[in-house]
Image 1 (cartoon, rainbow, N blue to C red):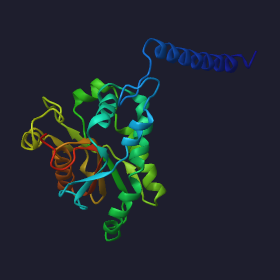
Image 2: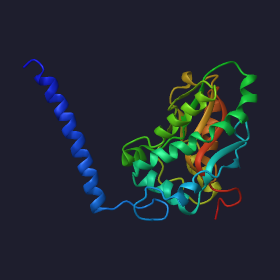
Image 3: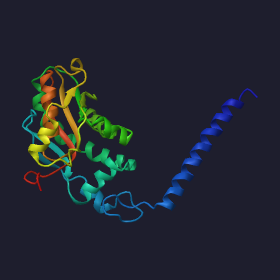
Length: 251
């Protein structure tokens, strides 16, 4: 009889696991899964769309020490649909493939930043998410970049770099999403002065990597760099899952 609570607890956990599997199966029957990039049935991501997620490109980012931002893929076609399904429609199973492609940027990133780190005092690299508005956070119900950040940190550690996630930036309320605002000038005006550092004492002297989901005109990452530099941090580079190729920002 003494073991009854333990057995009962195990039974409840097993029952919950079975219920979760059954619920997932029922959901698949009611709303069959289709590729987030092209709607091909029975795939989270079909092989063709998955292959498009890692086609790295760089975009200019002069506010950062390396002078550029790294993105996993161009923001167009199936890649655009995949990221919006994940970001705006809560397709959480996409966390796994998106974490992987961000981690795959680590070798190129470490080669870029290593010369800069050698000349600086040894402080941990802070991996900082570009901030979302409070309204966006409430709508999503989570910090959608968090698993991406953790994946990048683990990859950087594997390459011998001391890194950790630091949610250091905040954003005041804005009326439109950055991907909906007009052109480069409109986006810069929209974000000017609205990105701030929550606790400057935690950032001073640290090299920082800023991670965003999408880079369009570069206004968000530029404002992030300015806020970080103002409190004594060193903005090293920016990263994103996808970026609009240079010259196509206003298309």
